[in-house]
Length: 133
Ligand code: ATP
Image (cartoon, rainbow, N blue to C red; front, side, top):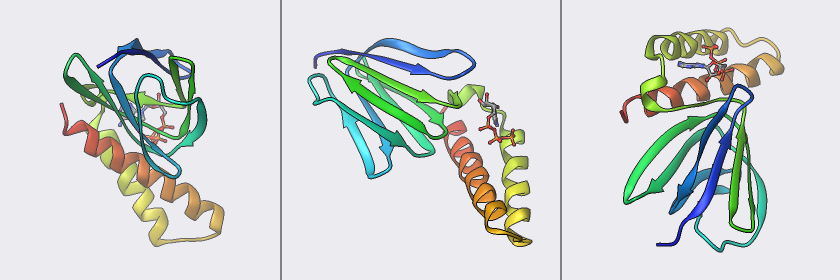
């Protein structure tokens, strides 16, 4: 399978930069698999997993929302936060999940509810990815 370049960038650091065979992301309209030669696209991402296929192996990272851009043979993912399974602090994610669930139980205005729902999605996603190490 032909390779193309993938960069994953967060405000803290360049998270990943290498040649890959395929990357699968969760776009706002569903999962997208990017292969070499794909038509250019820029689209928002949802909180979820980035699956990277390289040398016949699969690596998975947790990302919060952001966007993916495919231009020529360069794919860039820009996201506020990204973690590999072994980087995830499980206790922190469990606490974030409990806080979000508590807020949703005592729902006040709609802004709080939306915030809590997103925090809950981030925490659940991190807990799922942490099991993949
Ligand atoms: P918390 O309420 O625990 O801060 P959060 O979902 O609000 O969680 P984010 O705003 O998504 O956190 O991320 C802020 C920073 O903290 C990012 O750099 C992210 O990689 C890191 N981070 C958040 N949760 C975890 C975790 N459970 N393990 C490791 N790093 C985390």
